[in-house]
Image (cartoon, rainbow, N blue to C red; front, side, top):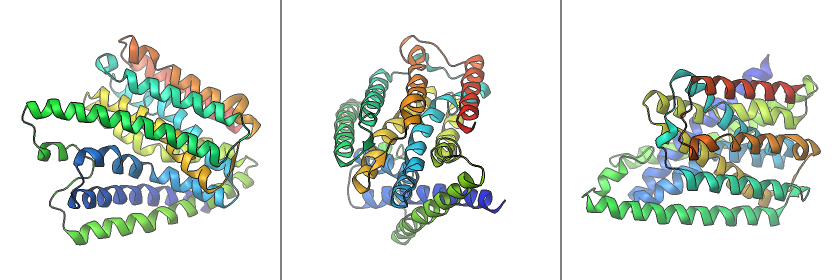
Length: 321
């Protein structure tokens, strides 16, 4: 029982520390005069991916690379099937009006690039640089779009203060001591939570005769997808389907390009045969399922929600058996 409790404790520490780091980093950036637009595209995006990054880095440093790769691939699969499936059961996601076609195509491109590099047998420093270069291109494109949108907003007399309110964790009046406290909590909590989670996930893998990759694909991936699930459920209940779908697409791109890209520079991530024959293709198939909702004007209704969630449950059952 204790390893299960410790895994849960590790996840809680990771999620709370990640949230603290985002709040501290966002408000430090704003206090230093960095525009809110840049903060939202970089600090927030990387900050919310910090738990997955720390888990992957920690796993590689402890010779548990299967856990690192499983975490990323499993999270991307869970993001589509579960993170969109459960909210759709609660409330129909009206994705027909969502204009995220370009971001979706970029996510598909990132997935194909990731799979192609996986067939090299491992993610080494060369693959890491390629993934990070692709990330920089996508961030540059997002920045151009955001600047264009901001110019349009300026015509409508929107101020910087209005824009800051839309940045996650932003509080223009946050005192310095609070910013430092959030940063310290994040910087201390993230490695602590990652260490607790990775060690105890490995214990569970050995105890039940399951591979570390399988634990990464299921338990760890599900745990690190909880923030996306919570965000998407709230977006669905508020009828903000664009937020729900955009959240999943953005998270998947960062998982593929940033998490493994950075991890591969720290240590080589070997790719087990199971990933090449099954898990990577499930991840890609899950991404392709979104085509009708992104391009054909379909809403994700309750029937689709049940189908997506059931598909995820079936996938987990296959992985664990």
